[in-house]
Image (cartoon, rainbow, N blue to C red; front, side):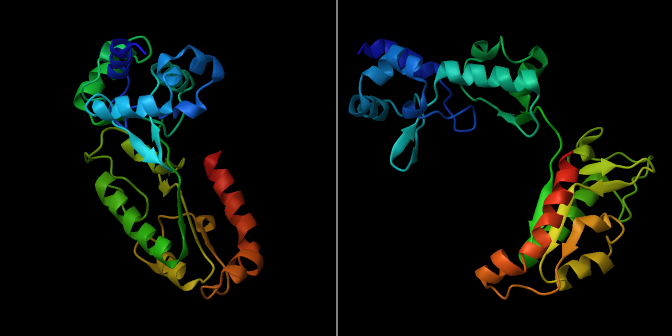
Length: 249
């Protein structure tokens, strides 16, 4: 194995778990594995070499196997994401990485933002699904906070004479806007027992949510998995999936 070649290659891979697409060597395509001296060196040799230079690449151990970043696969993956503008995919800041490596795949404006922001996103819309008593209560608190952050009132209206954090139209990440100017959360609340969601229906933010997004059964499963999975849960699962499908579309 050419140690200098391997060291040079490892310096060009992403140094952070947030910087790219983790690819264990065992999952690389066969043609890449045959041409890659790092793989041909053998697993024990590679492990020893990586341990000797921890500052070059950070390893994440999952089930005893380290994950490394392969330059070509990271490049192709970023190109694919940027070309298709996949929603919900994040490009994190890459500290200590030579940005020339990405100059052909990331637009210049994105490179500028990469230096100043922790992350940039190629997609904006998120759907939240809150399940069970704890999930519903946490979701209710979260949506109250989102409204405060974006200046949205409890009835879903946003006054036009104020400025809010997050920039123009940043609220579209979590809210959809109707023709009447009302902002409705992209969220589904579901619980087999209606009491907790009834508190949302009658609470301060009762006008914020679409009624079809608040889904309840008639009784809870009493911490019984079989009841929740095979009997009571079956009665609401189709409704939940249908409503979620509508939100996605």
